[in-house]
Length: 81
Image 1 (tube, rainbow, N blue to C red):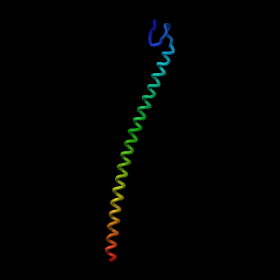
Image 2 (image 1 turned 180 degrees about the vertical axis):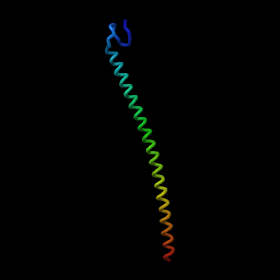
Image 3 (image 1 turned 90 degrees about the vertical axis):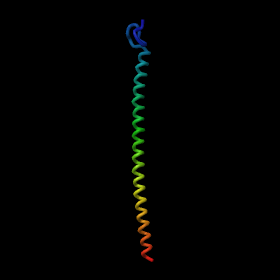
Image 4 (image 1 turned 120 degrees about the horizontal axis):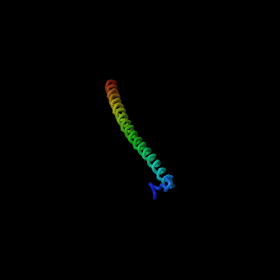
């Protein structure tokens, strides 16, 4: 009579026991890798969001500078007439 999954009558590991253990460790390894990929995706999304905020602020600042330069040029043109 068998005393467990794939175990022989004398209590030794069989080929099925070995396959079960290998399958378990591969599954655990994949779980860790999948969690790592999810963490990387979350980090990438956070970085992208922050970069977009920074780029929008830079764009806004440059637009303000352009508006000021345009005003200065307009005033200079009016004064030279």
